[in-house]
Length: 403
Image (cartoon, rainbow, N blue to C red):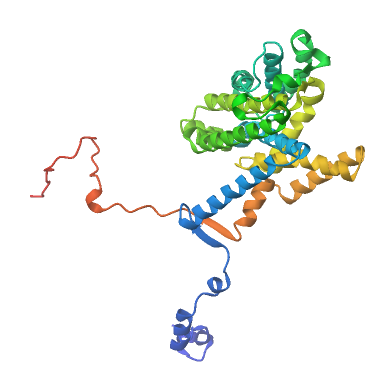
């Protein structure tokens, strides 16, 4: 026995905790926690609850108001919005391969050009209606994407980026090689009368811009819904698994070859639709001007600014790609506009490295959070008995009473 344990006035007695004060304990239990009392934000709502559905409905109404407002703008401003939607469709296609699957794709402008020339050749050489060429452009770019995606089975990272870069650089040279069909360096011109709106639309030839605007609205909505369903499907989970960890994905049964190849095909197909619309918008196709490597960099820049692997990132990125050069050109002319554009891009990437969409949702979560909804409980009498053999339940199940 030590001296400290015998002497109550020793140092050991000083370390003994004092007896709990009853009033102090009661006051602590009755008072709310300091963290919960001072923390009023963020508000939490459950998914698919009434407030959540009300917010979604409000967002849809706001989007519809913006679309209707854009339909009444002048020819120039409406044309800018049409360009935004075309670029949004193209960036949505790039988002499939680069954002969700993790495949670095630099030469995406080639798909843009292939589909644009597909539309131009079918309209000018064979007299097709421009709208009917969009499914053909979709299929052609899907098949080309499957072929271009074959190197992705063996290489990745910067090596894959170099292969796709070569594809984008070689495209204008290939177009120049087939000058009899594509017009070569002189370009391919689609006459205005060939882009007449269809009779069922109610638009005349002078309303060609309005017809193209509403056509882009419909196709953009279809593409957004399609991408949303792809991402939420089993194939979408396989894409993201291949992006995050290929070895783990393969060990889990994901067919990496099929996932990568189909991702390239879908990416090219969606961008192909945008290229066909771009041909209808421009009316004049020159490979050395509209489908160069700068166009590919613009698509990639729009994806980074908007936010990779996000639903609304392509739209935000397309707005940035179209309007930032436009407003910086008003501030400074010539090289000054290019410098301002580059500075604006660096500032956006520095402030929001996850993209503008990611930054928006990061700030929104500080105010409002959407938590998973509650599952509807199943009544005990409605539960199905579990039978590992898969046989249907019998009316008099056997009893296993112990002897």
